[in-house]
Length: 174
Ligand code: 5GP
Ligand code: MG
Image (cartoon, rainbow, N blue to C red):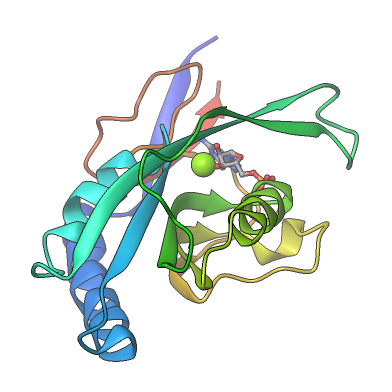
């Protein structure tokens, strides 16, 4: 089977959007410090590019979220394989996610951070597929709203491949 990728959002479009997104974020946080908490592995390219527009007000940390069990089941078990290193108690945390699909991962992460005592938890996702949502949750900042297609590139993988592409493309099998 041949995998083909059709560009959905090109490199220039991504970088331009990051610029406007970072302006929105900087305006909202004013001069307050915040933690950019990246969900590995998919969010890492987005974090790297976005964080370089933030000046020195942001610190960076990582979590790794894994989901197990039957993918068709809405209540698939989610767990944290890698915890944040920074103390997030009383801090403003901005979750950096590659994509929001069913919303289960984001729901889990927000709850985890709230239980850890974060003062405010917000979310910034590069991509959003609202038509797939199973949990009533929305990101505070979204780069692009996309249709229900499986996408790769710019951090997003298929079987660990394609993360290093500088654009987002729709993967199909021929
Ligand atoms: P959710 O819990 O919102 O259903 O899932 C979010 C996670 O599913 C993302 O962080 C990502 O790892 C994966 N995911 C959802 N849609 C896509 C997609 O179109 N492409 C890729 N590569 N991963 C996706
Ligand atoms: Mg992710």
